[in-house]
Length: 344
Image 1 (tube, rainbow, N blue to C red):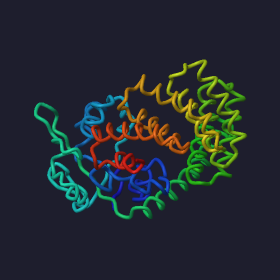
Image 2 (image 1 turned 60 degrees about the horizontal axis):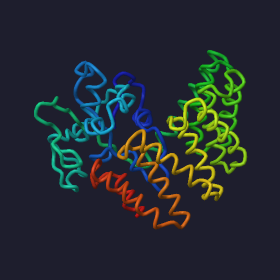
Image 3 (image 1 turned 45 degrees about the horizontal axis):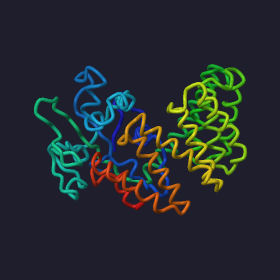
Image 4 (image 1 turned 135 degrees about the vertical axis):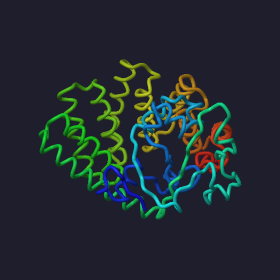
């Protein structure tokens, strides 16, 4: 159990929910909530005053990832400091004390999951701890229920304070609608996300970035509800606009293309989805490089699509390509690498 020093009224579930940003699928299980050194969250015993810049926090917590992908990618990950009080038994200084998972993998304290030294001569000494979390699925589900309740209260409060048609209320509508979508409450989410989309399109115009974001969120919900025929024209128009304004290889454009791929795949139109899926993968490779996580995701998506189309001979080399990169950059014990092995 743990508590937030700055907000003592918050319970363990509240804090745990704030650290979990999505609900895993049944296929994924709950590995998405596991720290690399075992079930838990990363922490440090050092004071925020010890970190002069956000780059210093990234270097302490995410040095290997920052070296591979650039520190800027992880700025948002360290934007918020959540003080925690934990029992000594549940706090693991991985430079000196093994978690159960570390013992199973034979890494020993003081080393990363790849077996590399946690601290290197000539570089700032890292202070990396893992806070052990008990409860697994039940804890996460309880936290998400509480998170939904809190979001509902905040949504009501903002609407009452600023007005239901205010931009502030629109932001809360969008955030709460997406949360309801993730929680599987599609009917409630549809009402909210449709209202946000229509309001933004009417006031800002269809081509405004906020409008396009709302269109994509609403279309993805419709797709999950089996309303692909309604989602397709929205996704298609958003992709066309982003292509014209931002360019074919802009991340937002590629996000719209990926949404089109998902729609086509879900409706069995895989032959039409294949060239679009290739376009996303090739654009990611050109703009981000072959080892970037977004590129590897695109490679995996194309491989899965080809496998579903019966093109196993084309899919296997892509799976192997992703597997080799993940083994080299993440290590053999990382869940993403294991997922690639299972795909083969």
